[in-house]
Image 1 (cartoon, one colour):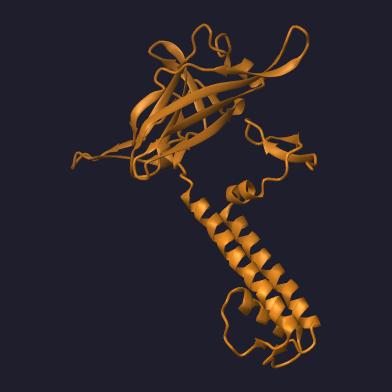
Image 2: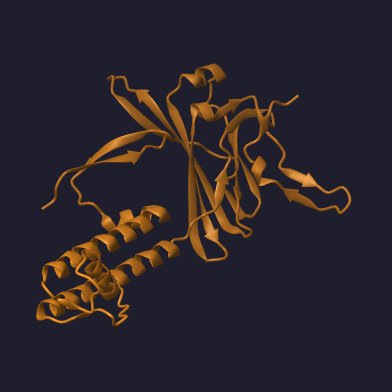
Length: 289
């Protein structure tokens, strides 16, 4: 039987969430794989303590079920459960009744199953390819080759190449139809170049604002009152792990700087003739003189 559920989900616009109602069951595996490592370790520690606390209680209620105890304290039974679940077996504590033998058998099965389950999920988390692509936290609009152009830039933080990198840029805009229906339309924004053979350094991405562009006819003032978000996605093949990696970023209207340009990230060595890139300056902009 499927029960209706309601959950919070991130919208394309950063900083906002929406409530999504669904009849699907909670996807435990996907939830655990998607959570942070700190959350995953918290789930592991919590499950470990709860299981041992439960079995400790069962051992505790069985009179004289465990031998070799130094006292009749509950904690003696709890730590015997820890030894059993983890298959440590120091030998100082041991089951001495049929009741205890049955509990030990059940707990051993739970321990083996739990160890395999958490190990498999940890391996799945480690095997997921993750990109280290950073986006500039602002986009700028300025003239480029005589045409007003929306620009943002990306960079690969890893010291390797992303082969066949492709980028897409979409606009999510709230509009009202002639019938008075409020909807969020998606516009694909054409780019000067949406593909690069190798992404190893930085990439400045251009969207010319010509007739047909959703930005055409807008000014800096009119953009402040527009309800829209830009979503940039990039994907490519990581040459080190030979797997596809992807990343995305969303720009709100407040993230767009009109009349600004990006500052140079390259540093030239006047003596050695070598150049370097300062990725900490990927977000820096300035007003051209």
